[in-house]
Image (cartoon, rainbow, N blue to C red; front, top):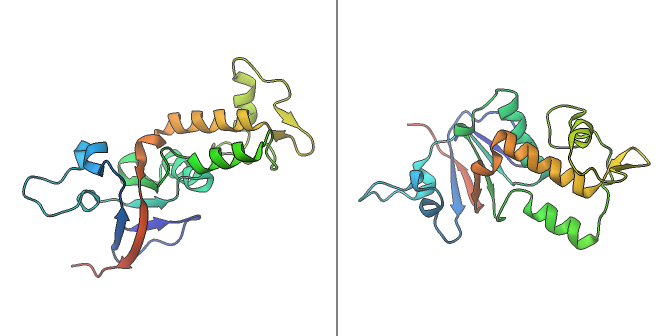
Length: 178
């Protein structure tokens, strides 16, 4: 692992990073058989895969960063994983917004997961079964349903759910190369 992102991108690390990851049941090898250690190996599933990017947190920012890295050609899906304890990306976002009874976002239509500044507005225009008042004043704030549907579309376009590893980081340490 040469890059670690938690919230927003930091500089590339000169030394590899050792990351201890807590995995839920079932183990990673059950979720992703291709990551299972070989017979007789003492390696854990998390140590089998070498990554260039590990994004800690599958919320709004972590999910957008993954889409941006792939969409801008900075990274490939094979080189990225998104570590989050939720059952799916944006799990906590959806739980919290539902619990508060939110109907529209506080932020404007330009704040979304897509790469294009006007991506949410374009998505709203193409959407089947359009919602009445998808944007409300002030600032053309999108409805929560529209925003979440758009997040799902961005997820599908970039294959972000396939990059999700369910777990959480317990410890990060720099290890000298060698």
